[in-house]
Length: 80
Image (cartoon, rainbow, N blue to C red):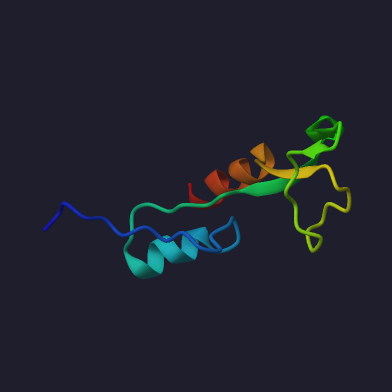
């Protein structure tokens, strides 16, 4: 019926969101719109709350992921 809705959610970004919506008939998408933040306050006294893998664009050992307002805006603008 109409009680379950399918969401596209892996790899969705501003470059492919409109196509996913128009070609699949879905009405909602999910995107992390993440980027990495280098924050030196994430570690100290032998404890670290950073968790960025070495393969990310953030080369510091003090990085964690955050929602990027610019990427959210690009995503919204791409589907309007």
